[in-house]
Image (tube, rainbow, N blue to C red):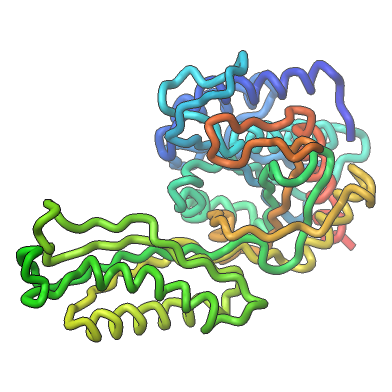
Length: 392
């Protein structure tokens, strides 16, 4: 459904207000207050759950039925904004460089549309729970929502969410069943060798040489032990060793990530990394210790919920503007909701047609405000279709 230009302007100003006042993960106290204030100004009281930051709200139809959740993330990034926009960040070193302000306004748009439907003559059966989630960038904000009990209290049966996508042209919606975003695992490798003077390397076991060979060799996991049809990326992000140019150190520390689209490749990639690192270090006479942390599962969209989102998007923007979403090897803690209920995460195109948009986490990143009500309409339509199907 559409709504007045006045409401659209209010949503755009709401988003820009959030953009001016970004906050990092689990520090979103003012953001939480602003969301709650906006809700109350439009006649909606936030739900009372023991969240440190973040907001929950629910809109009930006039008839009993099932429940679906619609989720936005609300946190920002430690980046100094360089956009020069009139609504640029006022917080030094902090910026909404991933568009979570846009997500928040889009879900707020859906809430207002759903509220209008609930108060209308026809109304609907069931409940839509709106999740304004903290700490997505920290990788665990979804846990606070899952653990608070709202899904059980409202018998939530599914969840939908979206992310702006500067690689997809404004006006388009990208939808994909199955794997959309990668699992993320972090590792730390400590290589212990034998230090000594640079003039007598034969009396040492140089952990820098060992580590350098490991860095290059890890790409063997991707190119020769994983099917070319599967997506796996191994990245070494830090490599620290040594204190002086004439000293061979006794230790080197490497840290990195593994990202996999397919769940079947995740454990295999870890196993191969562990074996390769251990064997490589041993071959040089060194010892490698490996710490591994499973950070996030991949986002895997449920076929049924995805079909509903795809059809909703077609109704809102037209079939010619709904495309098969390109998967991403980025991580998203929306995946944690998948342990609880089936869901669908989709792309909202916010990119310029000439391809000059800045990407996520860039200091000049921005989104197209015009897509706020469009994304809100897709959320609203998909949620209504889900509830309607439950009643059949």
